[in-house]
Image (cartoon, rainbow, N blue to C red; front, side):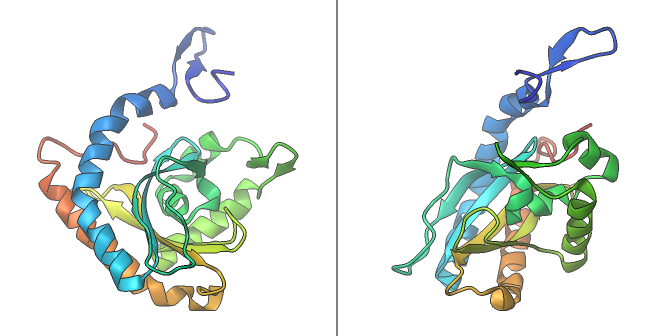
Length: 216
């Protein structure tokens, strides 16, 4: 069970050692604090500009965790997801971070089909790879009712001063108001917010780069 959830790994001598999830837990508090400090006012600006709910997400293994957010102003809006972790491959914030990984790193994360629910499987790795290629080409990722029915979202990567993607900024809205064909209209403000957060983050990471999405 510990191996399944990446808290332990077994080396060639069959000795158990701490897995990547343990490293993530150790690094998360300081990383999250820096990201939230650098990002929050920009999240607030983006939420006010779009009227929609905005979140900041980080990659943890095959999951994407919501570490901060600002709810939209519409009566019908997406509620805050702060503290929640969802499968990275069904969230726009997770996808922009997965898009930074190499093919080998993706294969290491997803050696088999991606489990969506106990009784269903997600896309094959080749299908995910094709989607992530499109994410890199566009510069943003889309979530079209993949993580929750009736909710669409668009996300862009936040980068540290070395250029590594360390978080995703996401705008989420009811699909009734944000149809798939209209999602591209949010690309510019989302990418601008991601760039602004990246610039602010550089001021808070003078002691060294934050843990990024690389597995090595």
